[in-house]
Image (cartoon, rainbow, N blue to C red):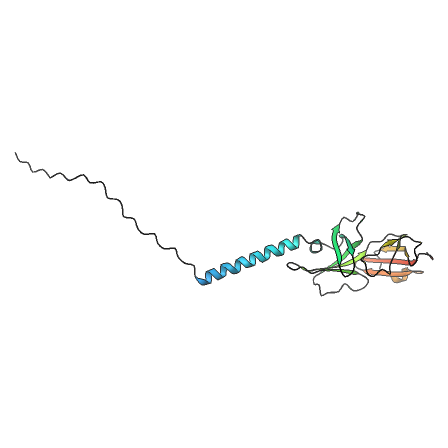
Length: 193
């Protein structure tokens, strides 16, 4: 008996799909690599600038804030403090936009030149109390050091006029005036006050 049946096909395992070679990664162009490096440098610079800005008391100061400035006029130490603190010896009168600007007048100046980050220049008014005595001739140290009124060369603050800038208001004493904020301080030698 003969039947025309198809011949059986051998049972081979199914063929594995052919794997393609992975495409080589595309290389970035030189321009793209340079731009990436430049952007990285700019971001790093901004981070350093921001850290210096936000960690600098002087850079964060505003007019009306109080400060403790100690040390000498050539090497002052600055920190912002609460106006009620015993160490507050200056009021910040103005914050200048550039370290090349001058406060002018009778202001003490504090300049902070940051290695990286913002430079700051502040115009300062000494915090003094009416009736107290000060060493006004001490030009090497910051501020007006408070002294005993019996000390030779001491000057007594006999009058303090807020919101007034008028030398004539100090009739029998030496005036020290400030235009911003307006302030007149009248000092007299302690022995004659």
